[in-house]
Image (cartoon, rainbow, N blue to C red; front, side, top):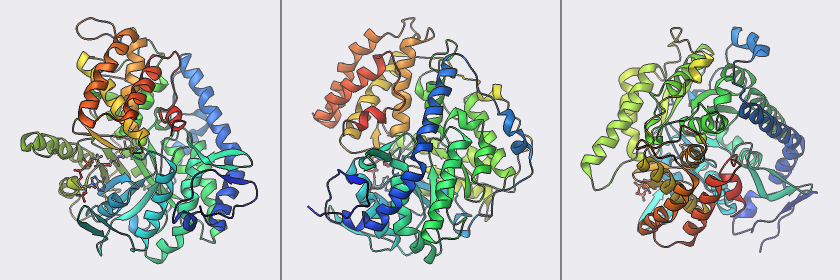
Length: 528
Ligand SMILES: CC(=O)SCCNC(=O)CCNC(=O)[C@H](O)C(C)(C)COP(=O)(O)OP(=O)(O)OC[C@H]1O[C@@H](n2cnc3c(N)ncnc32)[C@H](O)[C@@H]1OP(=O)(O)O
Ligand SMILES: O=CC(=O)O
Ligand SMILES: [Mg+2]
């Protein structure tokens, strides 16, 4: 096995396969170590703040806009100008950092491509490092692949790359600095920056990122400080890095202005990460006797709390000259059933048309087969303008109560409960096997959508409102009885993979245990 030269105090316990040493170079690892040492204490402090805040919410506190930052919300400031490569983002395709998908996404015809070390990626060591290899090769346009009789390489015109590193909660357990695991996000970010930032600038774009799952502007400040140090270390002008923040937690929704402000020299706007947002609402109000959402399929972008969040995000961004990017409809093309496919495509069209008409500058799609359709909907509204940032939404007034108007509460059905169990087991099983994004029942499922499923099951068991429409209370016994039945259905689809038995056991433990696992990926990560 290849031996690496490691900075003092660093240990790596992941296998070093062919090509890994080209990513895990001494200088790249020195940057990882430097950032980890400089910022790990703050990351841990901020994670501890999350725990304290969660306790207060569990005790009944309700979030509100922060009095101490009113001057930022009321102030007249804008983010720094957006680079040309990020001006037009009508359609952004997203997907895991797997080699074939990287090539297909770059070639998809989308304006930008968010490559994902996060929700759609299972963070097995191999995925993290081969992902870096794939991106390095793609940026230099040397990437190619022969698979199933097909040859893959990049077109002349490709999408602008935006990289999503892991969130603050995730460690990279294969790398220790001074005996401690480091941040997965810093690891992904530092390796990417070290190998690619200058190359991207030379090719007319730059190092652009999506930042996931933040809960406060102080967490955004941490990223900003990491950007400043990294730019200094790599000799890049300050402000080179640009980052779009996913507003995908209920607490961040109360700090959108503040998050943009913290990152104002490095900001490229906000994105409405709808799936984690729904999950975050369930998680943060899991013990509230008045909180209970209906079947997952009923919680859509037109639900009152989702509509308020989407409009507030849009208004906030445009006021600050920042792009507002819409999230993802989980619908994907359905093969071999034209009628069902037409319904699914209609759903995506409606979703994109709503965002475009509201004033969003672009939106996400899950699959290359959706790019043209989404582009059509944005073009209908934008014409030949690259974005509609000038469209101000002064008519929008969203209060704290609007953001917390959690409806619909009904129906909760046996089919909805079984759906959550089925998707939970199926997704967890795939994730354990190294695949973080799976088509299930014709929908895109990733870590965020699966979180909703498993969180709903936990919450319905505990909430007095967790009652099926036929009058039966959702109970742990009911869920435990359904798990083998749903596991059998999953296995009938995917084959008898051992990871699905493990997934079913983990799902049962997670949904019936007294405590609520903060993220499903935390216990799962210890299994891979
Ligand atoms: C909540 C959030 O965080 S959303 C963001 C995270 N989620 C995502 O990024 C979704 C990514 N999408 C995907 O992984 C896939 O589209 C899935 C799993 C949903 C569906 O996958 P499949 O059913 O295998 O897709 P399908 O078989 O239709 O793929 C057809 C072709 O499109 C490619 N493709 C599908 N989705 C993508 C994508 N997002 N990016 C690039 N290529 C893609 C496939 O690789 C395949 O290529 P090939 O014809 O060369 O073999
Ligand atoms: O990351 C996006 C989401 O919806 O979650
Ligand atoms: Mg998300």
